[in-house]
Image 1: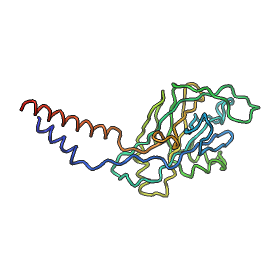
Image 2 (image 1 turned 30 degrees about the horizontal axis):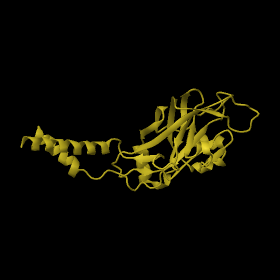
Image 3 (image 1 turned 120 degrees about the vertical axis):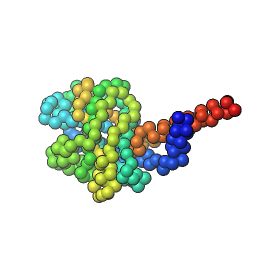
Image 4 (image 1 turned 30 degrees about the vertical axis):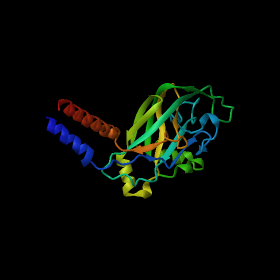
Length: 241
């Protein structure tokens, strides 16, 4: 049993090739649907270093109809990944914000209350066109073609600030094979509690917290565990000597 353990540890330490590196986003931005206001660089104090994804509300609630953000995230350099690697999209949630009363006569987004907890189901899509087009394109055509009329490639539910990951291996592999199809990921909410919640994610401007493509979560931890285990075996052997 000890021999098997040692052999296994040696395989982990010396026989496994280097893991793919973490790749930061090349681009992230969001667009507010109702007023088609596009934001690529966040400079206002309250939203500095973040981008937003709200819950899609179109034609179902006159109070909040069109009052949501949708976002795009792109990774241009995929050279560190092989087709056989697992790839995960990693996003870091800063907080949630919920709209206060919407005044139909007010020409602009509503005021918000910021919350540390909530419930937000995020949908992830593979964009079929350049996200920056969303600032000028006819959204009644552009948005369904990239979001509501296409199939999700992944989703997860967020309840508090922190790091969230979803497997996007198949989509990224298709981009590695055909880079001309890489328009990035589209992000928009599917449902939330409270109603019409928006998720604020750290953007590229927040060093170390922005969107990333990562290899399979936990592989680095396995390497560290192997090192610790090997150290323990050596310590026990020296103690017996």
